[in-house]
Length: 394
Image (tube, rainbow, N blue to C red; front, side):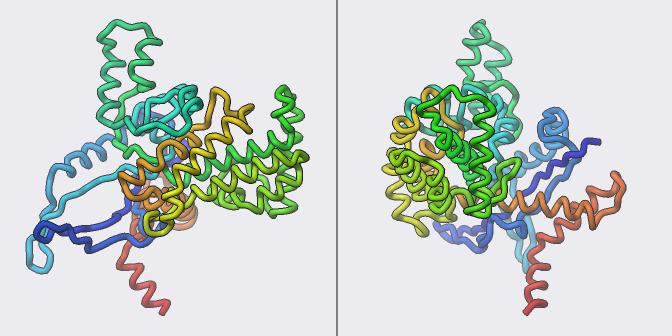
């Protein structure tokens, strides 16, 4: 049995009723990114990279979900028969999992994006102007083309035709960005950029591995001293949040000798912090309308800086999340009204709870362990119990 576990969870975001021609919302989740509403549906002892196991276990669940989309639930409530329809939204997946379930090549692929067909080179040459074109239905069609090769093309021509689809998609995801992983991906890139600026790579591009390690050690030591930021093995949400601040960039500027480079780095961080609320807030049109209006202008200037002052890093290449942040955020906001409302913090916190329940609240036999954790976790997300606990605290 593998030591890794996969959790498949859902959150009830809202319930609406139709009154005449209007839709009236009778329930809306106030904290959509909390572990208190992230209900576990399926727990498995498997590795998410093990495609065969993942599809074998999740396929019946997905089939049931597909059936639910086109059927109605009849419930008697207060002596009245009521019908319910379900609308599912596949969100909260990090890029690795989106690519896995939508049949796309891995994150290092030349096809950089899970929302559009751009290659890494195209995305680096045109940083801002891209439209969302990918969809689950199109991925399924492309897989069929990939599988049957109807035009008898070479492997390279075929790959170009299907734009990196190389496996059968089996879960429909919304072509969007996960706000938490966007933060993490972008913070990891800034962390790298800080090191390169300390080492003055714009002047000296051929630095050795040892020198690069030395820059990282210098940065880590300085961040620990000035910002109380302890070095970590892998970027996470908390570190990303603390790293992406004006105070951090001021601390990093102390290690950079050239004033012009300091200014460029300050401006880059300033633009990033102006853009961030747009994909972070639950409803940007209400919470940060000014940032939303200025987003296109700020992203254009951010892109300009990358292709001029930081050309040594971004000539012919761009990171997956920088591309999504600069090119796709306004279109997603226009379509869905939010990115932050669907973020995966609740799910990540659920992972933490899962580990705790496994250690402390489950029978230590592989046979019953998952059953205990699932029941325990389900109770933890119960609205009735939460009301009871709140009354008890009061």
